[in-house]
Image 1 (cartoon, helix red, strand yellow):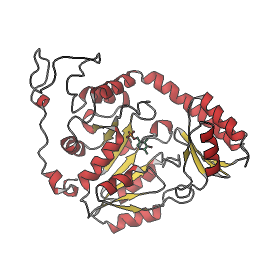
Image 2 (spheres, helix red, strand yellow):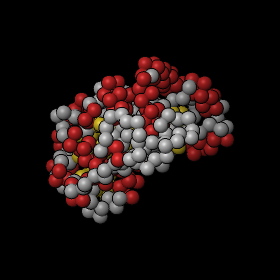
Image 3 (cartoon, protein in one colour):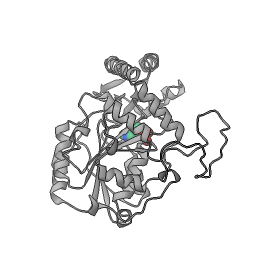
Image 4 (cartoon, helix red, strand yellow):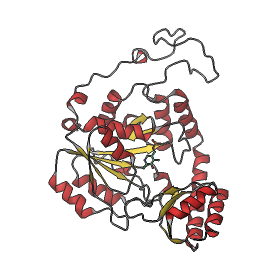
Length: 349
Ligand SMILES: *Cc1c(COP(=O)(O)O)cnc(C)c1O
């Protein structure tokens, strides 16, 4: 892994926080230039947050079974994606590999960092183009540093099998990033089970979807302790605010309720896949391993405007590759899904 790093990152001396020098409890904290007074009633908000999110990571180990040493907490997974690009890719020289249609952020962060983006489009049925991916592996180009594989994929909703992910890890020698933002909604398993065999694999998780904390901005990198240590050294020291760390901790304490709602979301997904499929303006509803349905319609632009006028906002994905006339509809409450269904049922060209 070391030889893949940018030189400046390999030789980086990490920022030293005041609280690096002291651990444990004390009565007087005058080491970090904080205001001693807590004006608003969020416990300890006058203090800097734990830069390493240790309490949260311990809880993550306990509830999600992700080992403490193998996690880094980010300001959403977006921060982690940007950190990975900045850790590994030399601007103006290196590239990332993408499988469009997929999550738009990968390309944005590549662009921001002046890093190239090489596209291997999905096949029209949304499967990975394994022949092209294996050819990429054989080519073994050292400037193609990172490969982003989103599974379950956004916006197509399908998850790739673990056998497929494993084949990619074997053939692509640089870093394979598997974005598992929606993994909780899938029955196909997590690539975390492959981490011990493939040190070039990194997995992304987030509290934004199943854990209902999109506003808190908490994402997780799961990777070898070597990659985790490097990211801890180069990230913004106080990248996750205290209320966010606490919110994620408390969400994990409610894991039982969250898992129950997860079952409910899956039930509503099955129900509305069938219901949407029966509508005159719908030509196909793709199977989904995520908390949304990709719905192919007779006219996505017209239907999107119609729904918007009725104050129903869905995502128009018609301009994405292989997604002509598709709308991406999240699984909300049963009430919300029923409103979308009824609006679609009364749509006329
Ligand atoms: C929603 C989503 C995320 C989550 O990003 P956060 O920054 O953690 O909110 C990551 N990847 C994909 C593919 C997503 O759809």
